[in-house]
Amino acid sequence: MATYPGITTLYVNLRRDRPEVNSPVFRTLPPNSQVEISHAIVGESYLDSNIWYVLSNQTFVWSKAVFTSSEVPLIEKKVLVTADDIGIVDEIDIGALIALREGWINSIAVLVNRPDDPESGYLKSFCQKLKDYSVNPSQSLYDTTHIGLHFTITSGSPLSHHASVGSLVDGDNRFLDFRKFNRRFETEDYVAQIKVEFQAQYERFKEVFGREPDHLTSHHDVLTFNRPLFDFVQDWSRRHRVPVRTHRYLPGSKRFWYDTLALLHVNLPSIRRMDSWEERLGPFEFDSSQRTIVDHYGPIPPFGITCYESAIGKKQRALDEWMRDFLVSTDRQREIVIHLMKSGFRSQSDFVRHYEPLKTSYPGIEIKYFDGRVAEYLSLQRRCVWNTDRSFGLLPRT
Image (cartoon, rainbow, N blue to C red; front, side):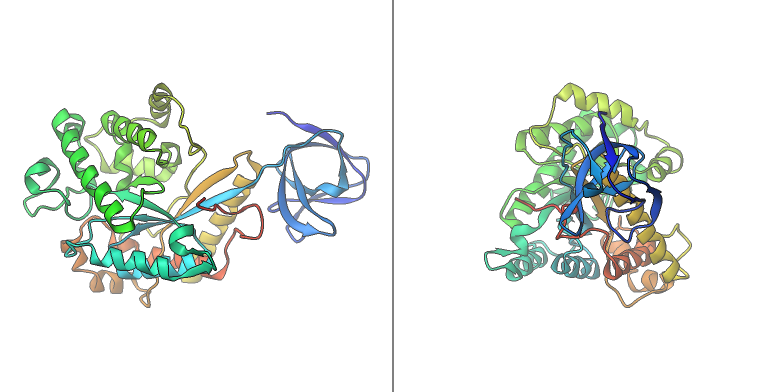
């Protein structure tokens, strides 16, 4: 990657974590020190400039303290912050609505197969709440929010008739647990049934929200489990011009769980193999390749959160590290997936007891993670790591 030579014109602090004057000091350089500049970004406004240089040692320096004869590229940074699993649990949806109104997030991924809601009255009401909340005189949350389809074949029941997707469900017409995935899901018959259900959920999404999804994701990431599903969603994404969350986002801990503990009957493709599949399909006509994800820092079952202050601090540190990595990179855009929930419960046992009926009505959402969702909500409530008044702010929908 190209770098650009520069020389300091006064004593200046290299900032370690952020392009901000109160960020921890990495080192102080005297005048006439040589530096290598990677790129420029917009940061905190200081005196008469808000432009900061990112140096090759991944620190930040105020641009007015450095002379360079080169034209350093300015990279505008935008973040897509997505609340996952919307549409099934009221308290998750309430948390997402508050987060949208407060500007903590700007994107949601919606499950459209809510139980006991055949006419989608609940989701239509949720959509209306987005339309009723004005962000500015000419736009509502419906206009500014990225609303994506969170396709599922591992939670709840299908929208399609049982006879059309019989291989995907159990005797109670519930989708099979994702750990039931095996090599049969690569066969023509299984893939055909998945396509039937995908079309049903896609049509339901358009019926509810009155527009194309702004992006496409899948519950438990099943669309990265084998070549036929991967090819199907990649082809669909290109034809419909709907961005799909990149397979490169899968965090290492999740891959480890999938590879070694959960999916013993599936030969999961590596990231490198999926890279080659994507390359053969050709480039996207839109930019979705830079989106990524931060891991979901929920507790590991069967252990619950015993100290919320510690859990919130861990989440905030993880968000800070994620944001720093983004800022020092040359990526213009990334996605972070958030699992939110607003609830008065704190004990994992209380969550499990209160939401016990969900295990029957909508299996596939892990109740033992609900305390982690609350901690994630609280971590954003206390301190967001992105600011909408700077270029490392939320990605506008248009």
